[in-house]
Image (cartoon, rainbow, N blue to C red; front, side):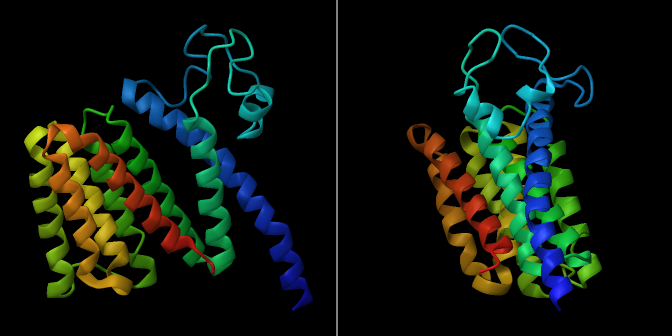
Length: 242
């Protein structure tokens, strides 16, 4: 028992640190996917002065804090998205481990939450013109439930979720591009499906509200932020060990 506790004390900070590193890579994926660039080459560089960044510039969260949110080489402000994504991904892996321990359940919980989070950031940034990232997010999210014996499309209540997601995407389509409509539908599916065991289909109500708000030009941005906030809350509910 003492050995298990010692191992947990060792692995908990490890997964928080590893999560922050995964968050740093996620920033690369998010930004380069939006511009259609490779996520592997070239190495990370300042988007303003194009100076290649060194290891000391890429320490998750800490580099941004020590540099006071500015590029070391040209002093251009660095977006707050970088440390926020890194910190969120650290919490996803760290809290997932704290909740379920090390094993298949941890891989499933952390994996699907990380994919869900990246897709949500892509959605709120509204820079990706292809629906592919959101289709893959749904496929992986559903697929990662199979090892745990949790399979969607097994009863009428769960079958209603894709229909609700499609309606929400349709509501959001009045003033949105095709890829963004697809994102609404995919993330609505994940959101409702993830909360179904705890909150039933009532979880669709706030998502419907966001979809309706998005149909008006004056409230469309607020709708995006509300929808993104709902995803973050649902992820927090999924990984919370408390």
